[in-house]
Amino acid sequence: MNIDLGSLSQDDLIALKAKLDGLTDVSGRSPMRPRQLSDLNLLPTATDPRPTFFWSADTLRGVDTRRTTPYPRLMWHKETGQEITVTTAAALASHTTMGYLEAPPFDIVIDPMDVLAAQLDALSEQDRAALIESQRQDRLNAIRKKLADMPEEKLAVLLAQSEKPAKAKRTA
Image (tube, rainbow, N blue to C red):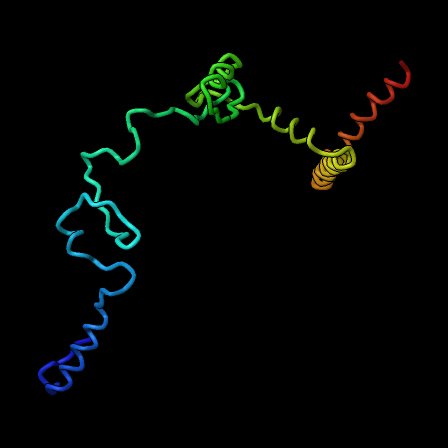
């Protein structure tokens, strides 16, 4: 949007300047004081809360940056890959003896059967029985579909083959 200021009268320009000066009022919550610009090492106070400047070469006030702690840190079990957080040197030492590493083991291959067994163990007896029954029904339905799609000649041969072992079992 372009405004041609040449078309405004002197009174309009004065009114516009007054409105713009009202937008840049620094008497609000955090005014910039001249001393804050001349002495950048001043500490903030209740009446002069901002801005505060910290030189990157100076240490933080009241904090010894030379003393650091490596805790908390992550550890991973070398066989299962389980991730834990240790917070002390004693916990680090004890978990190291239990087979935990400080770097994640990337060569762990998780067996899907172990995952499935853990998921089945987490189910209740009723849920486990219902799941096994639904799997049995799904397998029967898959066999029924394959039998329904089979030609009559092959179906007769298959049924004849499946009856022979059944008769042999009865005679034995």
